[in-house]
Length: 135
Image (cartoon, rainbow, N blue to C red; front, top):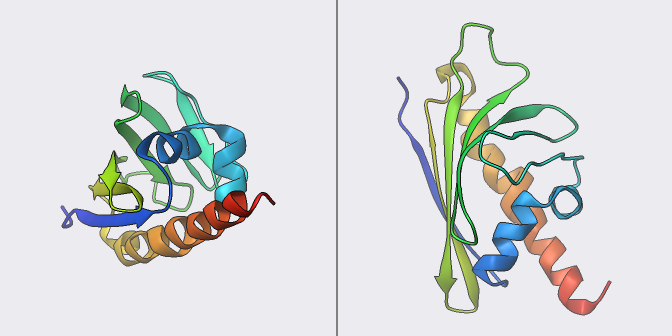
């Protein structure tokens, strides 16, 4: 088993707004630039990044916590799903997301670790800045 990926990011939005940005299909798509279809229900399925990512919601605590089984389409058939945990909390200037991503296959560990900032945190910062300016 690989080491869990742990990241924290502070963004200029409330924890509730960050939670909604992740779980709302339209907001998720707008924030990342990749089409997403998200479910808000435990047991519900999701896809993100034009179908390249998919999984199932394992636990949702509104405004605070999302736990998902998660996998990329290029993973090997024998690779088990990874587990993604996102915790949303208050932080100076807005909110913080604490991420733990466990059981990522060794062959994609670096890609996933570097992918979170590249495909989520940086685009989210731009999205939130545009939204604040009213664009």
